Image 1: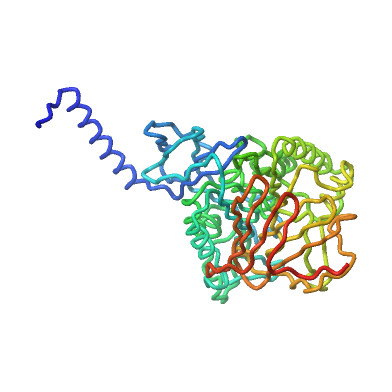
Image 2: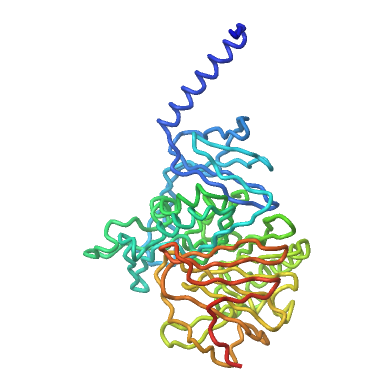
Length: 468
């Protein structure tokens, strides 16, 4: 049967063909540096694009074109005071436009400049957890990781293996950028590496090696101490933080660092009553905080908000960078260290158990290993996943954990496991309304440990002995 084409339909076909040609031309002229999705409060996805184009591209969602808005324009930010000396710091150069648009809830497809975007799912069943992913270049520590050697800086391989697992969501526990200072002359391991806090360092340490995972799933990210204002905070606010970029919170002016270094917790639903509450404790540090310190009131607000959000769900992961209930060893003395004195000094004024009752599991990084801790007391399990790229700088924890180790006063450890034999990533698979399967993977994509989470309790197949 011969189909009859009307004049109107012919015009439509021509217009569609022209649009396709123009779209292909735009893609060829200005392909995105990267495009990805960050999860925001309430479960909405924020599509982000970095581009060298003069204006933001259009976003296509379910066949409808939506405008993207400018989050940050290309610019060079004058050198500011950082945690490094003046001679080891420099202006932050961002030669690209950062664009964004909120994805409609329930969208089935979305793309920008021809690149398909991963979309949030109503029920999250498969989660990849990574952390501390940058390549350490830091003069004050005499730390020069071999960024040019993929076996010594394996984040790209970790991201590729984790993406092949096909997660519904990626969780990053903080510390994305470590290339702070210039590689010493004659050091082949890091020769030619970008450094500082501009886009070139962000690309080398995060966007380029993470690209398979950025394409695989939306991300939830907490800020690490390497993303505070005196370090990579400018890029944090431009690229990663899901909430609006407001004047005075961009970390450009050190006089505004108190507000730029803090944001209130928010919740990302995982479906079926589960959620992740994201906390910003990056500027808390490790020492007790005095009541006169602005951070004291900020952390009290954090606790109150965490408590209120946790009451709304039947299962809550609390995500922050510091392992509040973790255990590690001092790299210089080999002494056992536990908990976080800064967070404890504030949270304990509101609750002797440190964490709200409805928090089930803590996810953190900061310590460059993988770890699991569970308690007989009414404390949530702690998991640490700071082992995805940055060189290890801790001493292995003893096979027999000494008696008296309490990450918080009265926190009685009954199950403990750690892994410091290499780099890798962790996965979470939903099993029931309050239960999850945990797997620890090495860079070869081989499982090195399995654990289970049921409510606040967790256990692993390869535990360490807890001496009572």
